[in-house]
Structure formats: structure tokens, C-alpha cells
Length: 373
Image (cartoon, rainbow, N blue to C red):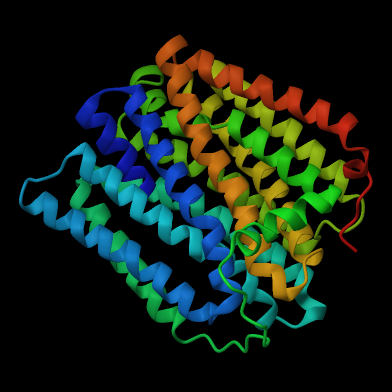
């Protein structure tokens, strides 16, 4: 929801596609500055407390935006500041959330738990902005108030979690420890191929950053249209999550992964070329389903291949690649939209995703053969 209100506010204040892209750039900078540090912290300290703090900080940021609206002090600089603070908190939250799961779930249920966890994360990451777009019809105050309440509620719920963290020897904060997660991934060719595929595919497929432009200027709808467009990927992700919880991807995960990435690229092209709301919603639904499929496979493989003592740092490196690719993808889409127009920007991204998938099939043949069991 915070993402939706920020994008809509930035475009309403500036009317600039480049300003929308800067939102992604600010998020990228915050993630780049703190992700690897977050991994070391998660492996050295109580992961539950890291999660608690990472929910509290964005909640306070949303309360600050409510105060700014009430006193008429909203500015682009302030909004970018909230994006920066939220990005910093997310850099600690993501590796902590992934690394704590084995302490909560029995090993025999781990694969299904990873599927459920990834599915729910993907659904809420899309349905949240959709709900934010709908609530924005009542004004930004309604969105920020809801966001603050939910963040603080999440912090309270995390405080109720009981998880025993295995004893690890805390590592000193050195350049070697900061980059140890990245070093681990570079040594594991399968992980390297998987994460680099996702990085470039998402970097090129950042069409969701331009949804406010499509809603207002191309499909001729308002905030309600933006809400529908945001909800469409969530519907696809929800349908895919139901399918995956009943029948998880275990055998032949490699071909399924490549199929999902190719479908993601095709759906992006269809959405970019569409000028009718029903077709756009259908394309985004397929996009959301295929994206969740690749997310589940990627998260499961990373956790299965990583020892517990390294999970925080490897998860941080994983989050760094996926998070920065999402944020840079938003910046890339905004920049291309400013140069060539929004339709061309989305089409270039979708075609680029298809090309990347084809190249990675040849460059990393082991990706076509791996299994999750």
C-alpha cells in the first residue's frame, strides 16, 4: 500500500515519469547500502528482534507522513526520504524472515512451508499496492494511516513468535564477512545462474512502475483503475499459490522455471501493447502467476542449498540481487518511458526478458536440469 500511495503522490506532484523512476533509484540506493550489513546482523543476533525492528521503523515513517499531510509539508524530498528509510528496514527484514523459517517449521514440512511463505509474500506484495490504490480514492491520509497501523501490528505479532536460533560464532564486521554471502553464491554455479536470470528478467520487466501512467493516460481510468491493475497480478499469484500448495514444484524445477520466465516476458509484451482494460488485466494476471512461480522455485533452492550459519548473509545477497533488480527495473522503466514513451518502455522490457531467458538456457545448462528434491 505504501508503494501505491508513494507512486501516485509522486506523479500527482511532479507529473514526471522520471520522478517515478527516481522512486526506484532511491530504493535501490538504500538496499545497496544496507543489504549485506543486514545479512551479517541476521546471522549474529536474534533474528526475531531484527524482524521486530524492521517492522517498527517503516510504521514510524508512515506516521511521519501523516504529520506532514496534516501540516501541509509534503514534498518530493520527504517522500523520497520515506522510501529510503523503508528500503533500509527491508534490507534487514528480508534476510531475517527467510533465515528464521527453519527455526519455526519442521524439516519434513520445509519445502511446502517455503512454497506457502513465498506465495503469501508475493500475493501480499501485489495485493497491498492494489488495496492502496483503492484506498487512495479516500485520500493519502487513509492509506498512510492503514499502513502505519499494519506495520505496528506486524511488529506486535513478530514479538509473539518463539524461535530458537542455533548458536553461531558471531563474525566480526569485516569486508570478508560482508561479502561472504555473495562469495558463496559465486561458488555455487546453480545459484549464480538462477539469481542472475532473475536479476536481468526483473530488471527488464518492471512494467508495474508505469501503472499510474497506464491507468490515467492510456486506459483512461483513475485511482480505481490503478487499483484493478494492481489487483490483477495478485489474482494470478493467488491462483498459482493455491496450485503450488497442493502440488509443489519438486521434480523438473528447471524447465518449469524457464517456462515461467518466458511466460512473464510474453505477458509483459501483451500488457504493453494493450489499450483495453480487460486485456490489460488478463495480461497482468498471467504476469503475476508466472512471477510467483519463479519466486517460489528461487527461494526454495536458495534455502535448501545454504547452511544455517550462512542463511542470513546468503539471503541478504539474494535480497540484494532481487531487490535492486526490482528497484532498478522501476528506474529503467521510468527512464525509457521518458525517452520513448511508456508503451515502448514496456515492450522493450518484455522482449528483453524473453531474450535473457533464451540466452540463460544455453549459458547455464544446469538450470534446465535441477530438481528441488
